[in-house]
Image 1 (cartoon, rainbow, N blue to C red):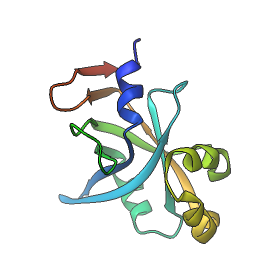
Image 2: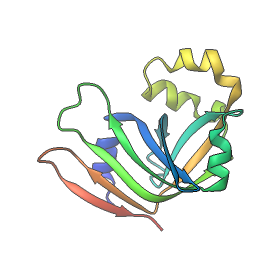
Image 3: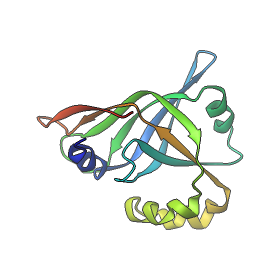
Image 4: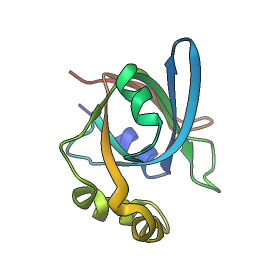
Amino acid sequence: MDISLLKQVVQSTNKIALSTAVNNEADVKIVNFVWYEDQPDTLYFSSVKTSPALKVYEQNPDIAFITIPNDGTAGNPYLRAQHVKLQRSTKTMTDLLPQYLKTVPNYQQVWDAIGSTLVVFELKLTDLFVDAGVGGEKQTLTFN
């Protein structure tokens, strides 16, 4: 599978708008995420272990998301997916910290403030729409 467009778009963002719904009540949260090229079908994000969002994630792990381009990124490139499975990860924030520090500006401040309270979640992708931005290439990647 050619993931070169995915790699290109991932480099332009570190945030997703994560959409959930429970009892016909929609909600959207903006969270930082990390991605690894050797695991292209998975995005990782964290949440504070006492957050009310954790109950929502458990009640309905079927989510949708769209990435938010970094400030100043030309053309508005994005990734978008629906019916993504959200699950707790076996990885820890200590495992993911080097990637967060590499891809999320000022993440050290977040880590220093609340790192010990964070739990890791995975977004397991099946179909991912990749849009390189205005006038750019578009494709849908399907993961098994």
